[in-house]
Amino acid sequence: MANVAVIGGGYVGLTTAVCLSHLGHRVTCIDVDAQKVELMRDGVSPIVEEGIDEMLSYGLGSGLLTFSLLGEDDLPDAEFWFLCLPTPQSDDGSADLTYIETAAQTIGPKIPAGSVVINKSTVPVGTAESVFALIGRDDVSVVSNPEFLREGTAINDFLHPDRVVVGSSDEEAATRVAMLYAKVAAPAVICGARSAELIKYGANSFLATKLSYVNAVAELCELLGADADDVMMGIGLDKRIGQGFLQPGPGWGGSCFPKDTSALLKIAETVGYDFAMLEEARRINVEQFDRTAGKVEDIVADISSARIGVWGLTFKSGTDDLRDSPAIEVVSRLLALGANVVAYDPTVTEPLAELPGLEIVKDPYSAVSGADALVVLTEWPEFQSVDLGKVGELMPSRQIVDGRNHLHRRALERYKFNVVGVGR
Ligand SMILES: NC(=O)c1ccc[n+]([C@@H]2O[C@H](COP(=O)([O-])OP(=O)(O)OC[C@H]3O[C@@H](n4cnc5c(N)ncnc54)[C@H](O)[C@@H]3O)[C@@H](O)[C@H]2O)c1
Image 1 (spheres, helix red, strand yellow):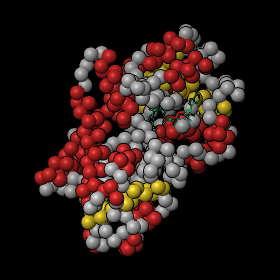
Image 2 (spheres, helix red, strand yellow):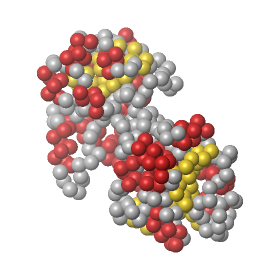
Image 3 (cartoon, protein in one colour):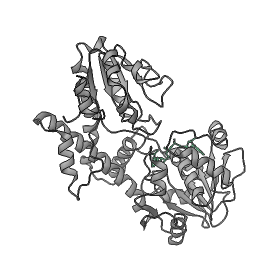
Image 4 (cartoon, helix red, strand yellow):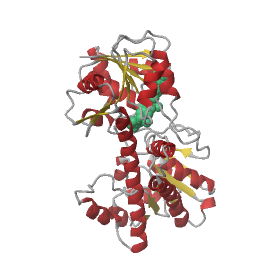
């Protein structure tokens, strides 16, 4: 059992905290947001994530997990200090390290000798070195331990990852961090900090590029009369390619891919490499947002006076995270064209500041009532079990753009909907 501090109680920090306490470590999760800390102390998760409430109760009940407010409570007596802080995109496209640097400066002078500071946030290559320099202590080590969890399956991904990556120039510190995961059955990649930092950006940029490629092939399917479901199945059965991440959609987004691809481009630029392939993947992705909105425009008589129902706003199902969601991109294009847009998402109940004209409703039927078309933008399972007969009655136009190929095709045919999918 180790004494661990997790700084930042967001999607990554809270997941890290509850999972490390589940693995038997004594964990203090520290945040600056008093309201969040209060909620977590009461056993209420501020984020939507499968299994997190149970894990939170378990951690609090076992006494292994506590929460603390930075600036108000004393720092815990920990030897491992995980930084799970935001690294948003700066105006120039690079990762903004302000949160990481501020935290390193705050805790640096106060943590016990022999402590290990662990960058779990996604940070540019060289950050372990710059954090070490900022802390300025020879008795403290810095290790890079990037996180690969996916929102929606975060707990499972943390406890059953494909790999654990630990990078440092200090081998002993890296081994100590790897030992925190001793009960996790996954290969460990122990390497230099720069390699660990690049593994994270390399993986996310590869996945984003893969999706752009899939969306480009889906477009070809539409132009050539092929079916993307069959094409992707046939491509994915090649073991060298694999079947994961071959689903075409409205474009990729979320809290990581947009900022991480942007940051990697910036990293490449600083060392004089023209990463044209990644630039192109990003350009194709913007085209995919345009194309999805264009399909809605094409399916209705006059978009400027049309009422459009939307199912799904989060960037994927299983999370309440709206950051850089493709749905936001598509809806903002429809609003700009003058459409009256009404959306339902199971996790969204309040109006969204970034989409002032968007009406939010509380169930999928209200979203389609009187609509000229429905567009499906997030793959929430509940959309597959709506009463399509009722949808048809509420939306006599029976026009659907299924931006995720999510609804059951045969059922839609039975109810005589006109459906435009992706790559079909
Ligand atoms: N969200 C993901 O799916 C995911 C997956 C892998 C890696 N990452 C990376 O992990 C990092 C964190 O991402 P996230 O999605 O968890 O962010 P988040 O915004 O959900 O959480 C950040 C938390 O840090 C808190 N915070 C801000 N400043 C603080 C401070 N000085 N001290 C203590 N707490 C502070 C915030 O209140 C918030 O609770 C980012 O670098 C991200 O790229 C995210």
